[in-house]
Image (cartoon, rainbow, N blue to C red):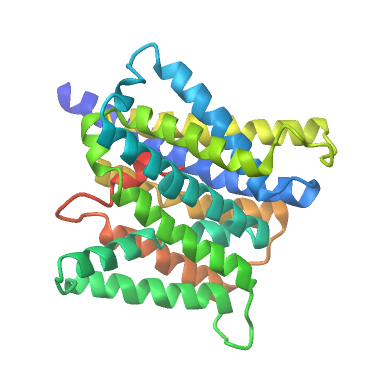
Length: 311
């Protein structure tokens, strides 16, 4: 009886993790639709998305957590600010700028290069030669990126240079916000760290974007609906689904199931937005995803942190 119950809980956790990853994958396409159907820019969307999502998240968790405790210690305050501006904001902004310059599947896949950059970072930090599986993962990631961007031919560059630049920078930013907040996450609930990081990062970019001045945007019911989807179903809900899944399955399993995000992003983009995706690009995307499977069981357990603070 207990074994059947445990199996039921495990499948519930799998379902929650897949639902969260799928919503993240869908939200990238929703952002691409917004960029192509309005004058809304990536910086404007990021500022509004982060401020609204961060404020809502902090409000919801304030009933169960002391959301101000992280600000009592000077070092924690400094780490919180640095993480908000370089980690959370960096990953958010570069990701959406890559979508704006290219498309959602490519941006999502390039962001999945994050674990590879983490591997390189720790190899340099500890002056330790990467293990065999890590070398294989790096080669797979490079090969996958080549196929994704060229569709198998140097004469057939399928993605704009700007999209590649922001996409690769997004992968580096993922590495930063995966590694940097480890100390904070050991002391405070991840929801508190993410909530403040979103609110602070969004507020910082809002100084330059001034989202309250949106006269050039032609608002419509569809645009408001899509923006609401990105904030609620593309940010708050998938984050809660991910955290809830950790009650039933391990962080390693959840990280692997997170690979559904680029798959969903690609399928939705092809079916809904009519994005052309060649066979070599598909193969390249699969190679990048496989690197996540290969690197998702590190001894220090740092790769999994990515999923808890990711979007």
